[in-house]
Image 1 (cartoon, rainbow, N blue to C red):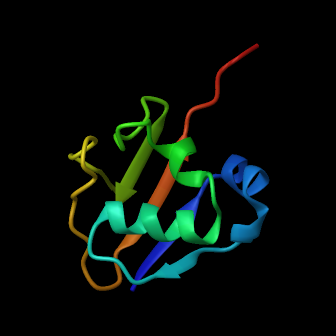
Image 2: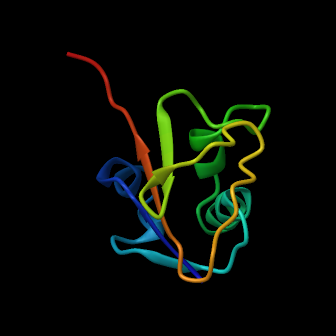
Length: 92
C-alpha cells in the first residue's frame, strides 16, 4: 500500500478525501490518480490535463523524489511508498 498525502489546497477543494493521508493499493502513480478520482470525482482533471499528463502547476513526489514520467505517470511505487501531491498557487 502506498501512503498518499496532498497539500491543504487539495483538501479544501476535495474534502471527501479527508484531512489525513490515504492508503492506496497502487503500483504506479497513474493508479494512485485513478483511485483518487474514484474517491473524489474531478480530482484527476485538477491534477492532469485532458491528455492525462501532469499539469504544469502540479508536482508529485514518490519517496521524496519528483516523478520522472509526467506524461503517462508510469513511475513505479514500492510497498509502503510515500506519495505527495503538491500544486503551486499563484496570484497576488
